[in-house]
Amino acid sequence: MVNQKRKKTHTIYGYNKEGTSKFVIVAPHGAGDDLKSGIIANRIAKNLNGAVVVNNQYLKPNNSRSNRADKHVRDFNRLCWSKKKKRYLWNPRPELKTFFNDIEAFCKKARKHSRDHKAVIIYIHSLKGKTIGIDLGVGLKSIKDKNKFVFNQKNISKNSGIVTIKINQVKKLKKILEDRLLADRGLKFSIGRVHSGWSKSSGIQFHKHEGRSDYALQMEISRTLRETKDDRSYIINLISETLTKVFK
Image (cartoon, helix red, strand yellow):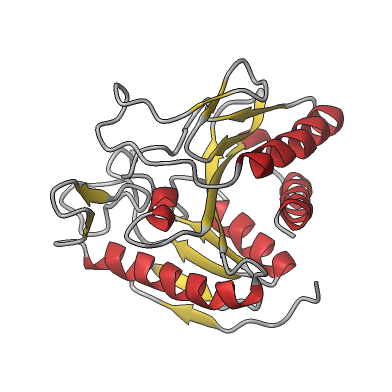
């Protein structure tokens, strides 16, 4: 794809940029919780001519620098699902509503660039561990890192969601990233070992409910792949190349 200059729009939560492809890249914790996730998301989006949405204003409540009395404390990857009303509730969180309204607006445009009329949304997160290079969240867990998966379990989450991409797409992502990460960096690839993303409160589940049916996944990226510019360039290019192969 040919990179195009994109207009940056500043918002209550941070910034966004429009795209001209099926991809929408999101950094919900770019204010200091998931270090370098905003930079990584922006560059992946640039590689893919995708839209990007970055929260760089709000910290999670458990961040050591956050103050619960501070209005800029909010987890942008934790939504409130009403089982009774069967929809997401936003009050009194206008900044979170704006964030996801913007994401949905970009998804609507992205569908026009997709052969199956589905946007592909990637949430970028950070992982503290040093042995797993990427942990993939798509609403399931891999059994012993094989191509066998456990789906949402009622005993784990009362608001269990669904698998957010096709199983053959999961297997393709696993094959490419597992081989490359091990060969290039000696790192493992896992699916749902850290965060499965199968609760409706997870950001990726937003794209599978209330009538939405896009592809959504989250990538937890190891600290060892975010520390230097060379590390970041490596993982940005690897993810960009992999996504173009899997979501043709």
